[in-house]
Image (cartoon, rainbow, N blue to C red; front, side, top):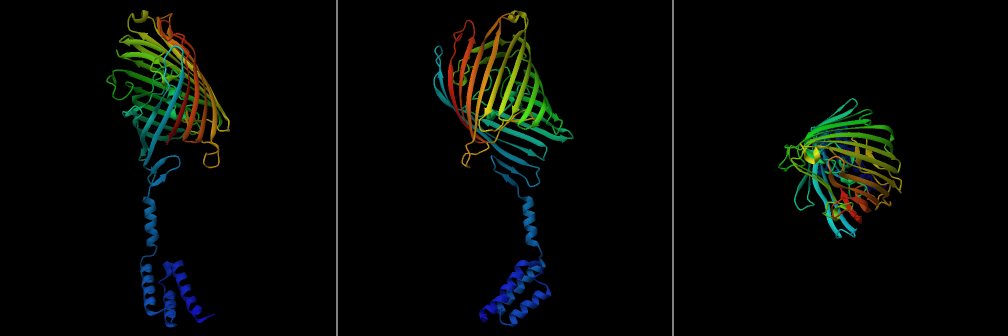
Length: 464
């Protein structure tokens, strides 16, 4: 071994010892080793002094660097960017999640009797945030900008707590009335471009300003849910807010759960509304929906003619692997003021049955502890070697606003059929194509009676 190599070897060994054990670099043995290396000429005086001073500094503050790193890690929030953007404080007490939704639609309708133009639109464009404060306080604020103006969708503050069998929560602000599965499930997870005819502020109320209580139970909240609330008018900003009164309650049970992909769900709800002399009107666009501003069926009770409304809803869902079956029925009993509509109660109702099947083997995701649908994840993500999820769906849909026998109301009866093909390239992106046709339209005395339009509807959507 050369003299140069013999001189370098002790220096390398000393450096390795210093790097591997900084907490012991200032002990007597280390100092003696540095002295020997200096005396043999391996270290010059300047290098010797530098290493001694560095060792003394480390000895005076053992582990200081590691402690600083530990303290910083305890203070650093966690950021989750997998399919969302969510920030959680290091202690888990606080959480903020940015949410959004964009839907772009295009309609190609066909009608012999009613002029319905081909058109496209941004159907929904939502931005918002939701989060958690001190672990238990929950909140959400979301606006829709699709119409050109900001429209509040959800805006509430709540409190959530676990108990031995599940969890309970309360909410105050604008949120969903607990009535109707099709309305309470988010538009992000619909199988078709439109909800059933009777849902979403038609025979089923949507979001209203009020307060509610929710609880679930059994097997960590998986077996049953119950929610009830009291509400004012349709939305914040309505001049009739709290002139109207709504009280609703919904209960669900899951009598069979093998796993998330094999289950049966049943539910029922009741809703009471006192219009307090405000306007009551139930109407709906045709099955081609957004492509026409004309309401094919329309039961206009006017202002001050309705004493109260008592409604009932029944729902059922079955998920069995890639197959899914769902049905709902809603019934209204409208009590008139005095002699309005002949002085007799008026009955309105609607129902639908829909089914779907994943060609690629995925399953609809039903949240048994909440009582509604949520998003599913394709087995193969497009861009990562997969083809996404492909789903076929069909729905038969009826809403009846005619009551000739009792009140003489001629709002119309509509019967639709819809089929769809959905492609999920990822779990937050979807492309939808559906075809809908009005099978029958019965509205005596109107220009729409007997019309049977159809439409091909397309959608591209993304949410986070």
